[in-house]
Length: 121
Image (cartoon, rainbow, N blue to C red; front, side, top):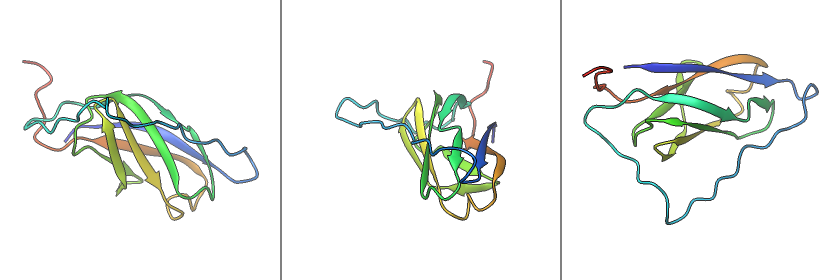
């Protein structure tokens, strides 16, 4: 299992103004998401929002990158969280009140299912 980590920071409610998550309209032209026998290494380009105001429940984070597959999941604080794979280049995850309980800086990980495709052929 290969993982990629980035940081997501929570701010106490009085510290930062609330920043809404990106709105993405899904339609018929959506790219199908593959479910390959050997998963590629996922890579993250960016995510939005970078700061979630504590108490914004549920908070949805949109992640842009490459090599997301149908069974990709996001782990936050070491636990899987509700994940929606929108396309091979976009994934969303939701943080409930318990995940936002303590303000701070936290890592999340996008995990593709095993077996992984070799990096070099």
